[in-house]
Amino acid sequence: MKIKEYFPPMKIGKKRIRCLLLFSGGLDSTLAGKILEEQGIDILPVNFKSSFFSSAKAIETAQQLNWPLIIIDITEEELKLVENPKHGYGKNMNPCIDCHAQMIKFTGQLMQKYNAKFIATGEIVNERPMSQNPKSLKIVEKESGFEGYILRPLSAKLLPMTIPEKEGLVKREMLLGLSGRSRKPQMVLAEKYGLKKYSTPAGGCLLTDPGFSLRLKKLLAWKGKLELEDVELIKRGRSIFPGENLIVIGRNKLENKILMENVKENDVIITTVGKFGPVTIIRSLNKIPNNDIIEKASLLTIRYSRGRKLPSQTVKIKIKNKYEFKTYKFSDWEKYF
Image (cartoon, rainbow, N blue to C red; front, side, top):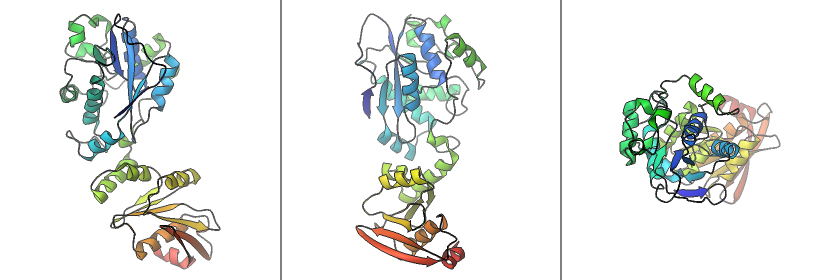
């Protein structure tokens, strides 16, 4: 876990009440912060980033609102969590209950450092069927280790009273009781607070993407664990898992560039000669793939190149620091695929 304060050093005062706000940069977490600001509470947003979700939206929104921001990189922790989540996955490879509990746990560990009295989130009861139903919210609190200190301003009136409410730090009557998936109440609130530019709630986490989740499942089955260099590789291109090998084929210049940035020492790199084509990476559990796999990957490289209809096509194959050139006829890849 790596922590970064994103904006000038913050004064940790003791006169005003402060809360740590789990902040994605989306509308719900922004509104949660605005509701608490109305009560004179200092808002200190905390955002989490990993290989599966970025901080870009949070940074942009915090800058617009002139809010400070703490960014916590949990890439390694998230990989371990996704491998074997205690409370399972959602529709895809998204372990939302465990993920939210982990985020709140890490946020709670910062309360003393930043002189915060409680944690706030933008969660709304029943907005998300797996992670935001009443039962899941209770599980998240228990697993985080900060039961009673998690306030959900947008749905607080539908939930048990929290410790900050009981202690008079937060006025419950100024909190809301939203429920369900409708966005209309949030849009009304956005207009009230003068929020003109805000994003839709979907699409922030790669783990909810069906295509990526399928590749991630295959990756986990292939290696038995998730490692960052493998995850970064399958985030782009076409991924194939023949036997003990992983073949990833770029689909455009940007993907080719990114694939090359994620090459490991024992990877085999295949490119076309003469006509533009993909970068193909072979990563093998046996360090060096056998000739059959290299040939299959070479023909796939030609198949997705601009020279796929030529009578013949040559590929350049890099193994360690040595290069080989092989030429295949059109009939080779046409018959193969």
